[in-house]
Image 1 (tube, protein in one colour):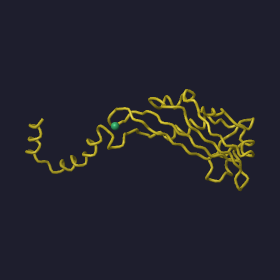
Image 2 (cartoon, rainbow, N blue to C red; image 1 turned 90 degrees about the vertical axis):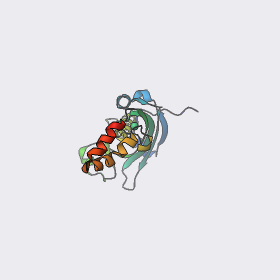
Image 3 (tube, rainbow, N blue to C red; image 1 turned 180 degrees about the vertical axis):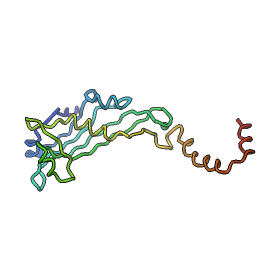
Amino acid sequence: MQKVKLPISVDSVRAANNRLEIEASLDKSLLSRLRESTNSIHSDIDTYFAFDVDQQKLRIFKGKASVAVELTCQRCNEPMTYQCEAEFTYCPVQNKEQENNLPDVYEPIYYDENGEVNLHQIVEDELLLTLPQIAKHAIEECKYGNYESSFGEIEEEQERPNPFDALAQLKLK
Ligand SMILES: [Zn+2]
């Protein structure tokens, strides 16, 4: 069964009043910024949005987005699969005053003159935030994992240098 496509934007007020839930996929070709920040995006993006009115009568929405991407391990330079899992909660606002009055648990997001928030942009922003600063394999999966984990020992040895050991190692090579 083909999944529903995520609409570009929704009227956040109406969606909240209707307690709208969207489970949809977002075409990976639409996420050019994520594409540029990775080697490739493995599949279309699974997304979920739930619009609601909270106890303080604030209109909010929660969402999730997930997709696997390929990055380059900065330790061994080989490709690695990275699973992006984003979870977020936003409260659409119209102006600075509303933004300043928001409880800390909500991230403010400005809606446009039609009351709409851009879901594609939110998904892409949130996925970009999940990317690691420095991509690295898990140490046991990395080609150079053993090399790095033995670094500590090498440094310790260097504290008490033994010229004969060094010579022996040179000969072994
Ligand atoms: Zn690696």
